[in-house]
Image 1 (spheres, rainbow, N blue to C red):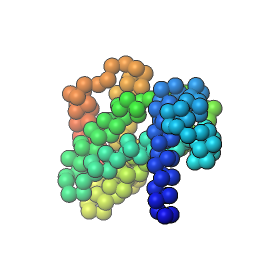
Image 2 (image 1 turned 180 degrees about the vertical axis):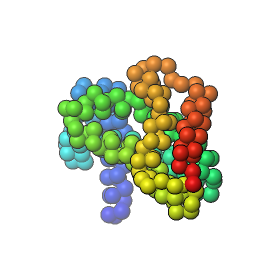
Image 3 (image 1 turned 60 degrees about the vertical axis):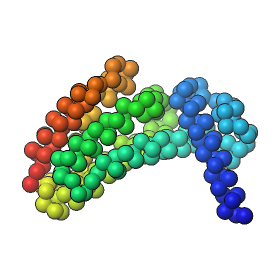
Length: 203
């Protein structure tokens, strides 16, 4: 009985979370209303507050949820059995695919616009998104240092540098609403970044 009740609770929470994602990405943080979330999810405000406390906590949960969804392809791209260059190329393309997704760009714009007023939201986004991606790559780089493939002192800094090269100005242009890069442009950017990284840190 307890197990069934827990499953129902989780389904209800996920329904509210999904409705919240739709509303926040559609209206932005300030204009989004709990009333609209309730209308789409069903139930009542009391139910929303039961699971998430308030609007700010709901938005923080949405950021964490979207960041986890967006980062999942990066884990699949990190393959310990492939060569360093192949893994970095796969990771770079997966990273840009994530950054340039419509929902990724929408949440990024929202966090940037509201980050000064709600620094806790900005921190949640940073820790669950960019910093989590850097940490995953850092762990992989540490393994390559141990097996002698790489020679560097700070894997976390190297991971930040790599993702910075991958982003180039492609993400900024997309976030500003300019044209999305073509597949050829993405491939060229990734190839250049990987070549520079391997040349700098290869043992």
